[in-house]
Image 1 (cartoon, rainbow, N blue to C red):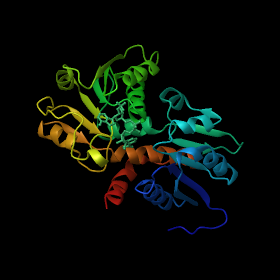
Image 2 (spheres, rainbow, N blue to C red; image 1 turned 90 degrees about the horizontal axis):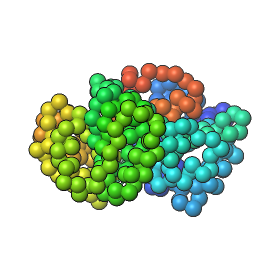
Image 3 (spheres, rainbow, N blue to C red; image 1 turned 30 degrees about the horizontal axis):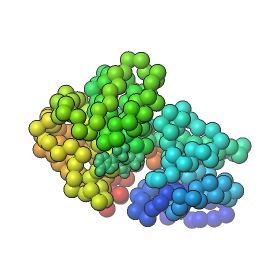
Length: 289
Ligand code: NAP
C-alpha cells in the first residue's frame, strides 16, 4: 500500500449502509496499481445528513465522492452543476469537487454499463432490449441503450407509472428508438423476452431478502443467441441468471459494471487516462476473493 502523507488526496463513498460495499477495495487497488497519492474511504451517511456530508467534504478538500443507495436522487439537490446524464436520469453517483470550488454531479453508471457490454462483444445498436426495473439503475441502463442506438426498449416494472416516468425522461434523446412500458403482470412479457436480443434485470429482486427469487420465473422464453444481464453481483449467479443460462442464453452479472463505473469516476477525479479493459480481469479476481 502506498504511504499516506500530508498531500494524500481523499476520495470516498457516501450511502447507507456502506459496510458491504466493494468500492473501497476496488478503488484503493487501482490507486495502488497506478501509483497515485489518493485513498478512498466508505462514509456511512444517514438520510438527513446528506447536505452536511457534501458541504463538509468540500470544506475538507476531498477530491470526489461516489454516492450509493439511498442518496443518488437526494444528492442531486446539493450539487452546483449536473452532467446531461445526471440531469436526465435524475441520479448522481459521482461528485467531483472542482478546483474552482464548484460541486459537479455526474452519473457514470451508464458508461460503466456500456463498457461492460463492449467487453462482452455486444453492440446495442439496432438491438431489441427489455429492461426489468425503473429505479436509478434502470435509468442509467436505459439512458445508455438509448444513447448507443438501441432499436427497441421495453421497460417492465412492478409500478407501471414509474416505468412511464422513466420513458418520458428519455423522450427526444434519440428519435429512432421505440420505447414501450409494460407492467410486470402483462400477459405478453414472456413473448417480449423471447424476441429480445438483450434482457436486463435492473431491479433488486434476487439479492438480500429476495435472494433465490427471480424477477421472471419462466425459462422457456430464454434462448441461445440472447444476452441476459443481471445488475446484481452478489449473489452470483442470481436465480434469474441461472434460469436464463438453463434456457441457453449467455449471461453477465453486475460485477463488470460495478468495476467499470468506478473506474470512470476515478478517471474523472484524478484526470488520469488508463485502459480500463486491462484492469477488469485483475479487479474481478480481487473482488471475488
Ligand atoms: P431502486 O431505485 O430502489 O429501484 C428498485 C427497482 O426494483 C424498482 O424498479 C422496483 O420496482 C424494483 N423492485 C424492488 N423490489 C421488487 C419486487 N419485490 N418485485 C418487483 N420489483 C421490485 O434501486 P436501484 O438503485 O435502481 O438498484 C437496483 C439494483 O441494481 C440493485 O440490486 C442494485 O444493487 C443494482 N445496481 C448495480 C449496479 C452495478 O454497478 N452493478 C449499479 C447500480 C445498481 P417499483 O418501482 O415497483 O418499486
